[in-house]
Image (cartoon, rainbow, N blue to C red; front, side, top):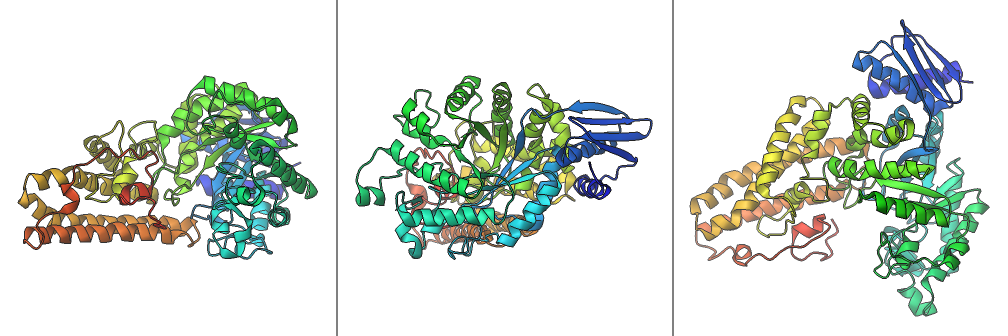
Length: 602
């Protein structure tokens, strides 16, 4: 039974997302499926829980937005749990009010599970360096979020790490005895299990969910660092299983059913350490020894139905399976819409065929969390509509749903997508914004500066139609800076070698100063969005990047001036013949200097 207070609260939250006040008196009841009805000025919603009720009210808001006066729709979940994992460990930690806004967006879509991916960004009282100076959530923060989520029928599931990805915590000297590799905990060390128990206990003190994600992904080199020196060689399957069993036992002690990322089993079974190796051999003896844990198959890259079918079938051999796909907000500045749609539409269809129960949209923050997660909200309906409407749901339905959720017309979303050339992981926009203007480090397979400039110019014109919208204003400025920098990088060496002193003079005295003004504007808009949604911790990374690129541009202008007046005989950086770059990841440190991985902390 839904109480009047419950209905009013949910309705108010849906209104806060959509900015639409429903004009009808709505009859609300409980039932086995979601049934939304509107005719002759009368509306009703029959829903199985609070989350479905929020979706039903959102569907009525869509009627108002789309000018419809009738609706009769019945839906059921095709996935028992469908939700989002938001990375709050790569610099950007959502404030509590921002998490609440995000929960309300999810609930409007009928998405009913949220994971906040916390490597160290949560309070563990016994370990003061856990999340120290990183914007960690206090236990009271997490209790507040948990209670708020429950009111919208959203399960807040703890999402931590109990093996790898612990570099920030292990970096402190006080925790050195817990270290195998720089980011991997030392298995078989009793102090390690004291830490893990404290982590799990902290989450139990904050959250009511019976599930917990214990991580354990990408623990490359586990058992091969200090472990090898301390304990000697061991079978790494046995090592992983021994550790997993102890972690599972601790989860059970505190009433949790654990879930873990599955890649380490497949990597250890692959001759090439490849998660997606279809020849990977995981012995039946290993499978039989896996304790009670759900395995999460994550794939953000592939559109191959055969691969998805193979991987889901292999996971089914090993136990209960969850799937984590990617809502690509980790390629820098703007969401990679083309990559998300290319990969997730076939992946979600495969999940429906294999009757996967839990499906997540991951929102990673790799390489400094440059992209605000709310910029990816328009793509959440790819997941929610696959859940509620099934694998045959037309893409157009997800598009309309995204427009109603965010208020952004699809043409604005499509304009943002032009930051990328295609549906592959190629990142010209990010690279041009951060790259050094004198070093040929930009890596653009399948793309060219001219093509990026042409795309960017059209996209910027479209986005400036909605200058009143902060997100569109920010996105337009991203393109503005990208275009200017692409021209500079494209022409600099050729003009220098041609002896075009007039071009060099114009660049140093006019173009670079103008570019610096555009960088200042971009940084201000970026900061405005960050301060709206994120804790201040982590902004220093972005701030230092802007500082580095603008100071380097000033330095380059000065170098050109000194060259033109004869103080320098040459521009040394431009004299050397460029070689193929070959960087695969296209991260910040790949494009700022040839001294990649030189220890630059930002």
